[in-house]
Length: 112
Image (tube, rainbow, N blue to C red; front, top):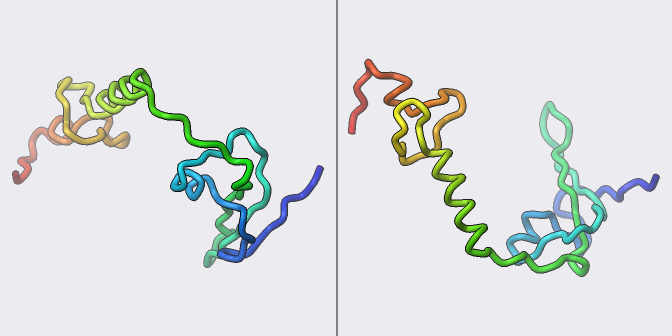
């Protein structure tokens, strides 16, 4: 088992990027293994760790198809639909409530 190189925050060499940085460049890891990791120290907790991938091995992001866009729209609509009143709340239903705010607090009037 090989150990990963560990770099301090903002001191990783050129040619390595996090998933978020790859995505911003229109790339994805493309099945490659993690090449290194970067650690950012945090007060009172363990370090924040981000995995790094080689940019030259990254592949372009797959384009969004019509079927993927339709599935994503359907999933987002389901997250906005209240299971109690079946109305589109206009926002993602909080998992802590399990229903829209008017259904969770029917006696309280909310300012518009």
